[in-house]
Amino acid sequence: MLPERDGHARFMEKSKNGMIAFEVEELTPPQRIVTRIDGKNLPFGGRWIFEISPMAEGCRLNITERGEVYNPVFRFVSRFILGYTGTLDRYLTSVAKKFVESTVPVEGRCLRSVIQMRPAFYAMLRQSSEHLESCDC
Image (cartoon, rainbow, N blue to C red):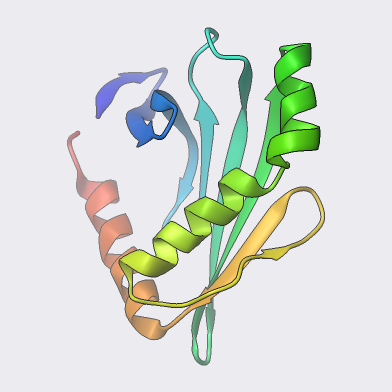
């Protein structure tokens, strides 16, 4: 965890592109978390909105990306080579693998990807969110 800024939790996330700092803008456990890339030195930025909803057979994880691509070259690569949903799809697939689930992310409007998880995943999220609410980190 990084030091808080303006009362918002901050953390580093490791990705194939290196370490990226994020700020938690909204935390409503265990239903919703909104994070924002916390850095001005990247060619991209934006918010990720994680929404978890219970279902009879488990839960549904929606991730909506509200991205910004500042560099025109990177914007071209994102649009025509990498694709806009590639990072979301890889992220959701990684979450599913962590909980031994198989899934195929579904693209929706506004760069939204969705997976459905079994009850064990939702229970883990509830426990994690309770820890976050009481955490001194």
